[in-house]
Image 1 (cartoon, rainbow, N blue to C red):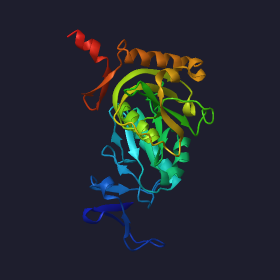
Image 2: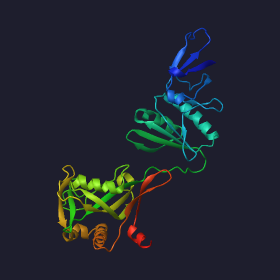
Image 3: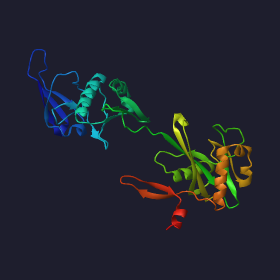
Image 4: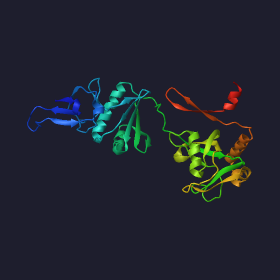
Amino acid sequence: MMISRVAKSHGLIRLLKKPCDGCLRSPLFLRFPADGFSAFRSYSLTRSRFMSTDPMVGEEARNGGVTMLPAVEDKYGGVMTEMTRPMDPSAFSALLRSSLSNWTLQGKKGVWIKLPRQLIGLAETAVKEGFWFHHAEKNYLMLVYWIPKQDHTLPSNASHRVGIAAFVLNHKKEVLVVQEKTGRFKGQGIWKFPTGVVNEGEYIHDGSVREVKEETGVDTEFVQVLAFRQTHKAFFEKSDLFFVCMMKPLSLEINAQESEIEAAQWMPWEEYNKQPFVQNHELLRYMTDICSAKTNGDYEGFTPLPVSAPDLQGNLYFNNRDLSSRQ
């Protein structure tokens, strides 16, 4: 048995052993991350196959002195652990099994493991213990495990991409249109609305203003969402939400984006509508009908209203004209 003592001021653990033949006679110091072990007092370490001198050896649970991965509880009866230090795969496997056993006894449900890019080698070990890939970002991989015997109720990975098309009409009844250098419309001579994808953490109305500026150099003000379309199995088999947004031009000078846009111009609205591409495309016919109705005052779109939820801030898009008429 080895007795351990935490040296709080230095973030060290000192391991002492009785002298014996072939044994170390001097103390052995191991350095642990202070944030993961600040709650430790004193404890015993036994020789086992998951003992390791690796900096990331988990935490000792208060109930029973069992070594477990450090974790925080989520809002749905599960736990999440984020690996921050390298670890031997065999030690990680044993520690993972020990943690799962204790989380099972505690009645936990979902278990999430966040692996930074530099520790991606531990993913194979986690998969062998029953975890599966949930999602990945440029700097980390998230894996998940479901403890109960019933089918899991874990949320799926983000399932939709959000795109916009910008309907920008000036005082001469000319619409802002572009021809693209890349994509499926490259080299076809098709004039279309500026389009693009809303960035992570970006609101639809902000994304539409940014996309118009990037592609054409024209400054705009968001007016309304006029309509949206949903499709499935689009980009990387994900679903797609495509919002048609009406914009008010704040400038008229065009400076087309060199990397993506072949040409850009203000085109008479009627000329745009007469393009065979528009007439033969069901979605575009509906879009032009809606846009025409809006400009004639026969249609009302959805205006964003900043609203707050218990723990989130966002925007509610609604028809404020008809709502106001009832008040």
